[in-house]
Amino acid sequence: MDRKRTKTPKRKKEPENVSGWREAWGYIKVFLLAVLAAFLICHFVIVNAVVPTGSMENTILSHSRVIGNRLAYVGSAPQRGDIVIFHYPVDEKSLYIKRIIGLPGETVSIREGKIYINDSTEPLEEDYLPEEWVYANDGYTFQVPEDSYLVLGDNRNVSLDARFWAQEAVNAGLASNLEEAQSYTYVARDKIVAKAVLVYWPPSQIHLIKHHSYQ
Image (tube, rainbow, N blue to C red):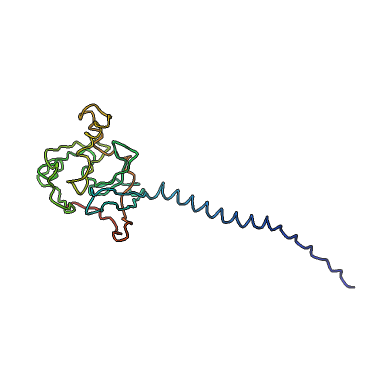
């Protein structure tokens, strides 16, 4: 006895507009995921910064673009010699990049173009300076607060750094005198955004950023 063949019901063909929408939605999802990934990376993993001046030459040339690692200090503290990206104390909307010189709780003295830490009679060896330091190079003593860091540019003759920020704060009306403005001299730990790791622009200057280790 022959079995009756059952016909497989034909699938209805999707309207072209529905099929097209599904394909478009697939592309949209990929785009949205890429945007989300870029957002998360830029806000939680890396920071992109521009160095508009020669304050860090020759380590980082003017008009260079730099990538910093936001996760560099998760579980560890910044070290002397690190080059960091941070919120400028006088105007926190601006990002600055400088080298850490003084650590929390230290006394840092600048005498005749040399830097001394606490009671040391031997100055820091700073072979990264591009030229002889002759401007604003004497008579400074900094008492670094426990939660903060003292930072300076490598090109000390042109760098707007911790030596001048108290006066900048007075000029900006943030304090009435230099004594009141001393807190603007230092970078608080929670204002350090990232550790600078790579110069990626211009192409001729692409290099990993070298951080200094003092003997």
